[in-house]
Image 1 (tube, one colour):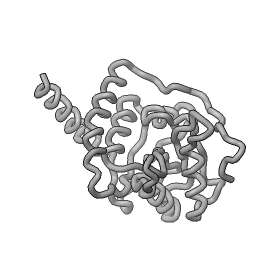
Image 2 (spheres, helix red, strand yellow):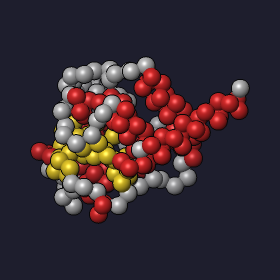
Image 3 (spheres, rainbow, N blue to C red):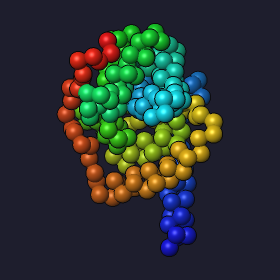
Image 4 (cartoon, one colour):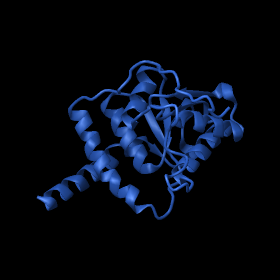
Length: 204
């Protein structure tokens, strides 16, 4: 049973990568111009307090796409289910610190999962064809969601941190969940614009 499950996870992983390969870009010179890049959220720091390099590289990649004129706008999409955790606000603040203008940044406070972020970008924010920013393994899952939902999107790959083997192992299970979401036709938790939840001492 365990062998069969392992084989299925590997098949799903390989098949996903192959099926969406035409939507993945690693060379900025080959990336077409898009109006908007959707930056997929993650925590800026681990629970240990260590910086999250996945976050750092996504922010830097999004900034570079703006500076190089590949996109005009950014939609930062992440989790803000409580006033004490606000991925989009943190991303927007860091992008502004790196030179991106505030008027170039939109925030999606209900990007709780990759599925939510991709579908909401199309259905709630009504983006025209757009480019997603994340690491390759995440890009491939995002593009599976886009392709199976007939959403016109590609993904530009941010740098991948070295030595993060556990994250890649978790991706096998995330892709199995992705297929299950597709088979069950699961939709985002919210399909309307959601205001952010703030504390009294939220970062300015």
